[in-house]
Length: 94
Image (tube, rainbow, N blue to C red):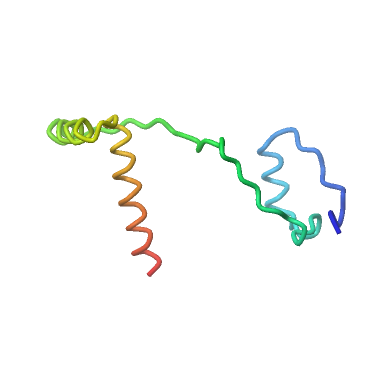
């Protein structure tokens, strides 16, 4: 089967492509029945640096826990946040 309409315009930027697909239905262009799963093992998530103010005692506790687990404290903080976000999202949808 393949593409229904091979005329997908060339986009000079991701913003332009994002705008195009927000206004056009991909089922008019692509036959999704022919789609195959794709694994991207080396894809890294986009990261955003933030500034976070914590009470000194909280940061000290976090560093102590991280040291005992032999992980960087920032990584431990991300793990804690990920766990809490997952739990809160589950509560939100139930």
